[in-house]
Image 1: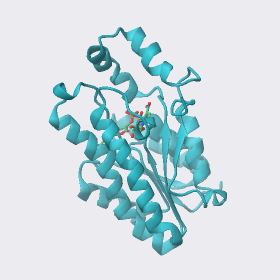
Image 2 (image 1 turned 30 degrees about the vertical axis):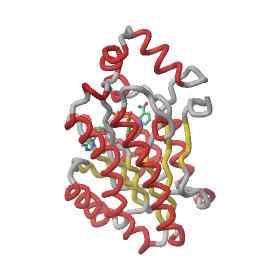
Image 3 (image 1 turned 135 degrees about the horizontal axis):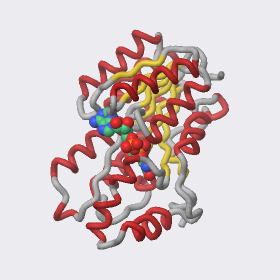
Image 4 (image 1 turned 60 degrees about the vertical axis):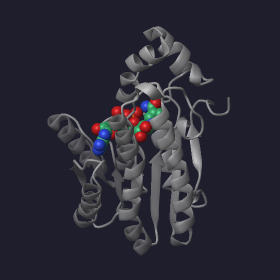
Length: 261
Ligand code: NAD
């Protein structure tokens, strides 16, 4: 339990990759602050499971990642109710697939706010706590799309490339304070976010569901397998170890070889 006494905030952790991060941190004894949307009973069951696993605090905060004041309030609450803010994972994300001429402006703006700007606001709120403590781990779930593009994902690719630049800048600003800042870039992970993009991809590219599954999603990874949320979370856990303190400003792929190809 190498994270006993530490607190980890994970945005967008009511499902998918974020939930796997929260479970991994709790399994190492961290107090965990979960966030995101979903059925209230299900979220309470997740919160209770995390508290039982860690033997420490587990909080749910419903902050909307499009709202800077709610992000700041989440971080304040985490510090007040658990005593510190040691690890923060910017993970909340949404996706929309459409050709540029059909892409609604409000969807583009929501993607940029949730996938990119929220990471900036989280960093602004957590870095002062981490500097005071002389220790911190700031991680963002970027994507293979922070390194390469795919058609019809202009807003997502734009936001994810932005995360890579933010990560490098913040790593330089915090390097002498015991803080590391990295992004993790998964390939396709079977989550509600990926499932939801299948109909739009079928429409935008004129493909069948099977073609999207096999020729777009699985074909992206040379391993021909989806990445699992647990494989992504395992890297985040490693980044929190003292052995990883020289890893900062990096964009680390967990993508079955996608970006190597
Ligand atoms: P998911 O849909 O399972 O989880 C997204 C989470 O974000 C949910 O908890 C949701 O409630 C939350 N969320 C959405 N809008 C929010 C808002 N306004 N405020 C607060 N929370 C909000 O999806 P996932 O695939 O687990 O995605 C998690 C992250 O991983 C995203 O940033 C995504 O871009 C990234 N990612 C996913 C894949 C993949 O293949 N699934 C690949 C690379 C990167």
